[in-house]
Length: 79
Image 1 (cartoon, helix red, strand yellow):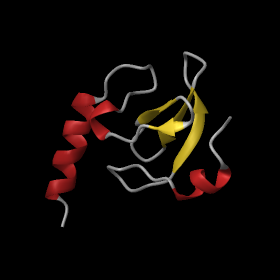
Image 2 (spheres, one colour):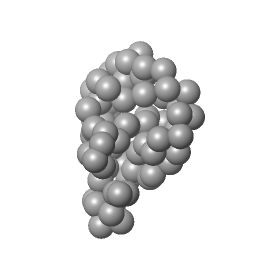
Image 3 (cartoon, helix red, strand yellow):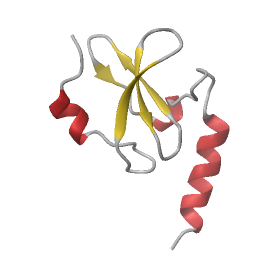
């Protein structure tokens, strides 16, 4: 079972509030990707998106902890 288009239409990145798109990860599993910041979010079975910023990954599957810290700091400095 895949995520419904209706759900995809309302999901946004919790950090940037930008839309998410469905992509295939290097492991062959589907992930949600934010084009604005490059963060990837896993989808657990059965089709449960894990939109926790601290568990986001980069495209290569590595932890995005350093990038998330930098993005959070940038967001705090914007008016």
